[in-house]
Image (cartoon, rainbow, N blue to C red; front, side, top):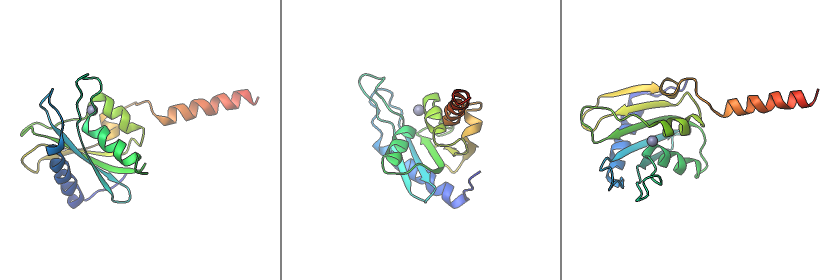
Length: 150
Ligand SMILES: [Zn+2]
């Protein structure tokens, strides 16, 4: 499992908080900001971007992942997620958990609230156990190839 120190965590949380201001959320009025740490130390931020169709909306987490992957990054250490909630933590939705699993179940997920340094740290595997991911498809295709070569 990837390791991350306290300084990196607090830096990520601060980056996540800074990106709250860019949130486009005229429908939910619920800004979410996040910061994604790549294995090479690069940080990509994200915010939720809503859409009048509602279904076209994208969460902060997927925004950050799409920015990172489309810039050539595929290995990630951690993501910090925050909202304007002052006491509660903002957990990633099911769509985002699935989206993130694509790039590794060991991702560290840091949930922080708005005003203080309280946060909770999980692995993605804890948030989406027994997930379906790339390994399932590669295992299936390997098995299929073995059968067809017999
Ligand atoms: Zn989401």
